[in-house]
Amino acid sequence: MEKFKKVSGIAAVLDMRNVDTDMIIPKQFLKTITRENLGNALFFDLRFEPDGEKKSDFILNQKAYRNTEILITGENFGCGSSREHAPWALRDFGIRVIIASRFADIFYNNCFQNALLPIILPELEVRKLMEQAARGTNATFSIDLEKQQISTPDGTISFDIEPERKKSLLEGRDAIAHTMEKSDAIAKFEQKQLENQPWLQNPIAKTL
Image 1 (cartoon, one colour):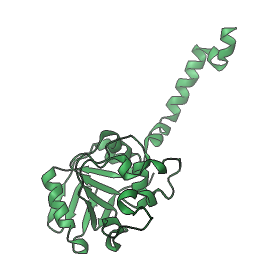
Image 2 (cartoon, one colour):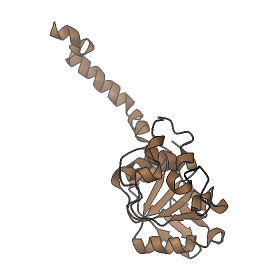
Image 3 (cartoon, helix red, strand yellow):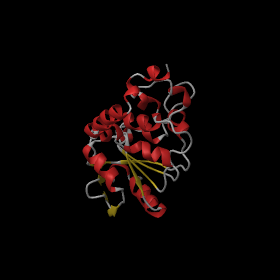
Image 4 (cartoon, helix red, strand yellow):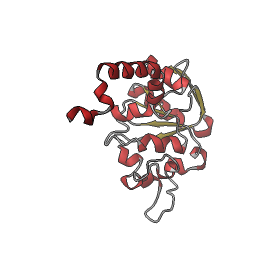
């Protein structure tokens, strides 16, 4: 998994509450089990007309925000189904940080498995950041995970994050990497179990 340390740039604002995972990536794009090109389907119904033309008024279609890595949005972002394609699509588009006052639990957990940093702030702080982001290229944001700080044109805001999640992002370790770190202990356990229950090597023989 890609390491996360610091992200800087302009921020895109999606001022909508209860953005569910079907809005993030509609169900017709869930047939794939790979992550490539899912960014093209991100916010598909918001970004595209029925004929496939891009909606010029949608923020991520505007030239200044096409390469943004920071998204500021409304509360309860990522609600709905537990599809992991949602964080996949966000990451493939280029988003690294999502700021909101509340996230759906499963989506929030999935973010950390996909090198996405979801930052929870009080609603008033989120509103202030949205106002600053509205200045466009005149407002540069910098998110420093190590310091747990958001630097903006108007000052610095601190954010909380669980120490283990922070460490995993900084080191680029997902759940599989955590498991592999314990491979020696797992191997020892399996060996001991086979010594105590040798029939597990051939469970069919035990029933004969």
